[in-house]
Length: 385
Length: 181
Image (cartoon, rainbow over all chains, first blue to last red):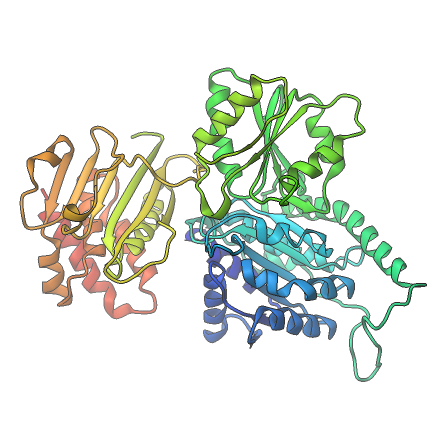
């Protein structure tokens, strides 16, 4: 199939169609709604043979997804903001039971005050739920990553649920060209899901029953090991995707742009990476050596890749679109922690930007580059003007 | 043409400004451009002022901020001229395309102004004052960067589920294309 101009939400729905999940329990919430609508249309038109379960809340959506996935079938859902917050307790059940559920999050702020617009506070608040978190920049990347997510989650060395996060409105409602492949090509990349340890009446087992103090910690260690394995599997899935589809996103964990010879870099995630590229291009044209480090995978955190990317830099600005209130931006904390033990490390600055849909512009990025190239002290700043 | 051409569309909720931006992105893509379209993200209400945006470029479009300095502004409902600052942020030498039967006041003529009575055509063809598709014809005629063929292809794609609307919309686009000056 050729490239087509479609909405990023449609691109996500198309990806789901290509991956053919058996069960899709979903509850609509702005700005994820268009994903639910498109998938419903596909099912209605007979283009997708999935069971859509209309649930009464997001808590039920993920609970139904857990039940479905535990019976050994490919399972998908999507949510945003308050919906993800309402799922919170079951997020841990899905990951603890090692169920490879794929979920898109159309990132949106959390209330109060009520705000339907984009930032990363919803998914960042679910950081420690043992879900893999991937952030995307474009409609094409949303499509590609949703397909990759099934492959990564279902890998026997991983078996963890994945959130594929796309910026609500700022990306989810954008129309742009997307390359939609042939079904056979996706089939070649993503084999049929072969589950293990499923709920089966012919061979009854219990999944996720009580873990006593003598065993519980082993389960948690196994989850942590699976996250470590995921670092390799995500890279592998990205390079295999490149071989088949001629597209890739850095090494699957991080992507560097114009980092060669750069003294300063911006670190960010999601759609603002695109705007940062434009600022980098503009400064490079003026001979100013700056670059971008895009965090595609936030959990597991790609520590080694970050260390390598930061090695030759003098200053780094981390742009967070969420806040750990009482401390700082979550990516800023992680980046500092990742390189703490390195002998040679850049000065790391924190910028909080784009909360609740506040636009982040090329000029914001130019200003940040200017500020970090002129200081010898770490900056902590909220972009409020 | 600037590296990225930015277009802002003004309408009222229900008039199809968002669809206009999407159709402009789809048809300009068929014309060989890279494109991006998105609405002003908000809570839309019927009758309230609505904005939508389009970016058109020969190269990949990475920019994802909102549009502040459009080169072209398309106005679907001329009553908006009285209630909002339509030309806000417009680039100097920019193009203003308005659906109206009247001559615009002198203050607008610092821009390149084009007017067309698309409502008249829409009322004739659809029996409704819905001008968004018709005004694509105005864009094509004024910029010479979009062909009727590409618009028609976009209309066929968009109204796949409503084939009865395709021919009427094509007629409206053509009529405005030939009428505007």
